[in-house]
Image (cartoon, rainbow, N blue to C red; front, side):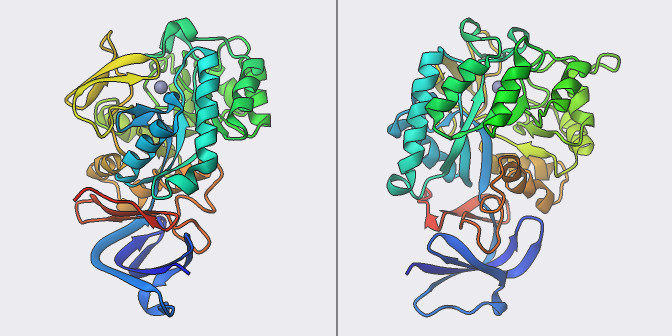
Length: 391
Ligand SMILES: [Zn+2]
């Protein structure tokens, strides 16, 4: 029996703050949480005490392409091990492996590899961040807003091609990002929803009316809001106007201070509220690595000063980690509990795993992060297994 009692200065569930908290972990699951004095230390259990730390749920990243020198599109155990191990050191305990537009055959191979790794991960890499599933970003996106997605592999939305991707994913598909204004988007969105995926708008040139129609058809999420979208203007508000004003739609934000300026971040937070913003990394293989040249899917990106660009100089994902996103959002003046839910409870709810991820409560997976006073990660457990952090 593997039982640990964490006795921590305070904990955020994240919606509730518990002072002098106890978290009892048994066999990878939170058995009980509350004030330490209300909990018994079971016989044989180990107690870990840190009066200075703050315990929070492990971060959930629904949009990440790579880290630690590897991209999820490589689809190998080695690549996924590098990604999941790197992000765990920054507090991310589960994530959606996110594809980038590529040759569809290659996408299928990558997705098969991710599904294979996911099925065995608990045996091989238990201390790493858990691969919850797959976020398909591309190829059904707008050539006008493709960002760095390779133009030669963009496709009009196709329910048929989506079925191929989903078959390769063997039940691991979670989010489909598409541009809803494209021909074929409606049957593709319907097929995605039928398969249980969240439909997200992204890399889109949709007008306000087109985005509204997509929301009426079931689109519920918008990826890296402001980036790779038709720009907002007061007489042509576009997809951003629709996202900002539709309470049923959640909005991703890359809070690295490079992708979105501070006032635009504040506007998004005020319009959507703390329950509808989801912090994502959009991280690439360069995450956790020194400046240099890296691969994003099948193309090269250059990282300078931590900013990732392709050969045309366009922003190409980020090197952001979610612990840094948290610090950036808190620096805007948000209460810690509000900032925390944007990278724990909100993303977990989006993909329907809020009963076990992104939350500290009895019955949830023991995905726990300890933060110091400066909100730097000091210890991380994924399903009760502690990650090794560099000294
Ligand atoms: Zn993107």
